[in-house]
Length: 116
View 1 (spheres, one colour):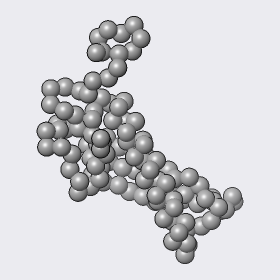
View 2 (cartoon, helix red, strand yellow):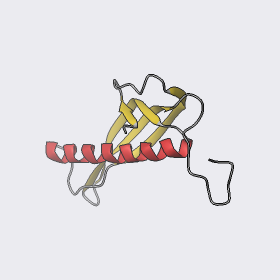
View 3 (cartoon, one colour):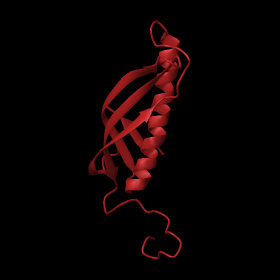
View 4 (cartoon, helix red, strand yellow):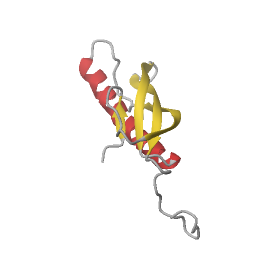
């Protein structure tokens, strides 16, 4: 089931907004610079987006929602000249959504009968 919606994609019509949040993520570091290396940039971008998707899914579960709609992002290249590495850093603003009638059901914690 899809839980992360990007920009023009819209969550289900019956989803209710629960609040706006921000997550940050970084791609893995690569031994190169981004200058004139489209393949390196693409690889880091794809890694950043996958890490961001995972991070958003974790936040959806942590905050008790069911969907996230990313509405804004800022991605910046970073480099460490001393080590000859480069990576991407992203900051993603999103709206958390849940289903009508309350939060997503979560498994109860051991000894906690209030979360069923």
